Length: 411
Ligand SMILES: [Zn+2]
Image (cartoon, rainbow, N blue to C red; front, side, top):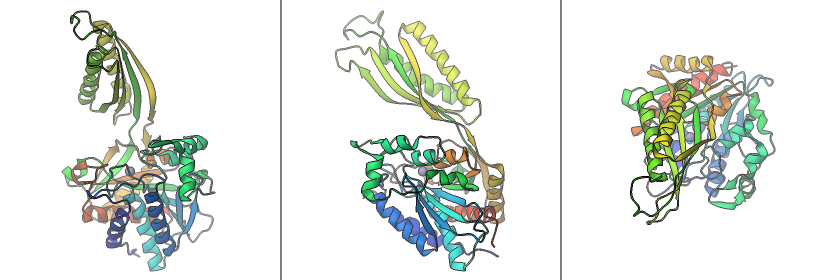
């Protein structure tokens, strides 16, 4: 029996959700646990309750909307993503995955159907990490990767007197469920816009994400010697000139080894027109699709550092500031997406996931799958982020049947 998934209802729901926190430039500003996030949560809750779901909210505010299965003892299959956005975000990064899950349960409910196992639509709190660091903190704590108390104590990056816990209380979404309930999912599916140009360029509507690639984050501190900007060039230890070489080395290494590397957050001391900077600090992150890629990029960077320090006489410290492990996704769930895509006559390709998503945390504990649809120009985290109705429908056509199958099929 085919299930009457409605691509039109899915699209309309995305449009309606995008009106919450809409900005004049066509984007969305819906920071985690803000008044806009509250309105988005209420809308999702009301839609899901109308589709026969029950709601649980965990202590970190993540929402679990469950459509009961025929077997009350079966562990739920979860489908989710996030409704929060970055300050200048778009309409689809996050809501696409949540509302795809909603459309699955709506279609079942409308047709009076049930799967054997329950299906739980999840809205993870604070995926973006714009308001509370780190990103993906609720899913991380749910999987036991991050400490729940530390997540709750995270200060608001825009108003440090206020914490995650304060914001959660303020909008009334502090629940009582143990976030660890999510570790009991039998499977987790997440659909997301690609946030890159590959699928659109190749004319392929479905990306099967084989793994989230590992990310290494560093703080780099370059120490030289200050002095007057009018002093001779010879014998200087200009920390900014040295740091600039390292920034370019990162770019060169990434390009040469087929990875990605970026320097950000550069600060200098002294920061004055008349002084040679003696201390420069910057953040760097590297990522590579191959299992040993980050190691090779790190080795190349340390070589560049050694050469530079010898030549310029500066001191360079590279401290690890965090990162994410490389997380492979569950082969059988990825296969279920490939089969469903093929059955719907949708082209698909395997690809790595260069940007961490909640599925990365889930994938550490629960069999998980991440699937991409294209976005125009690869643009995301920007008001102009956009997808076509065809891509929107393609994702539903691939993931809908895969989730039903993972939930044991129709009862
Ligand atoms: Zn996202």
